Length: 208
Image 1 (cartoon, rainbow, N blue to C red):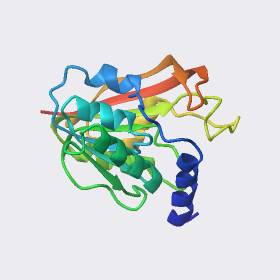
Image 2: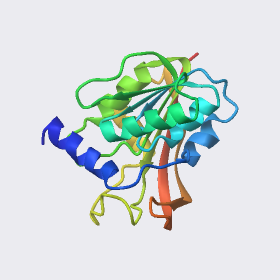
Image 3: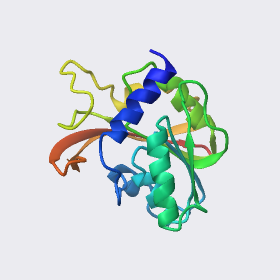
């Protein structure tokens, strides 16, 4: 399927639900980043913008990237309304085609899954190379499907964090896997429902 199909699909996903007035950050981000000095961050697949807005409130300068124009326009409007537009830049970008430019101390990729062609290993390898020395790459993948997920395929297999790390194939002399585990939590969906889900959490740090 083409990039046009992917854009139309994700624009449709976001347009089909109301804009989030106060999107919340992912818990895997907050538990990883709290206490770190705020510098430059890249949010890949920023979605409703909870992570990007939370980071900006902490003083990070955030580049929030998504393939959906609907998503990035909504986040940009939220940033303006909260007086955060000087610390949050939104960009519609297709990481299947290229990787956003820049150097960062944090790159986060939460639930970067899609029904369209995407060489995730190449994208995440590019993300690791975009880190400054000492920077961190946080990859959080689905380890189970929530009832509100767009993907309800009962035969889907979720690669483990170690498998994802092996696929990225980074030089262990330069990048260290600091965390690779499955972790459960109670998640809240767009319609207010809750469910027990599993996250696959991978944290990689570039050598200082």
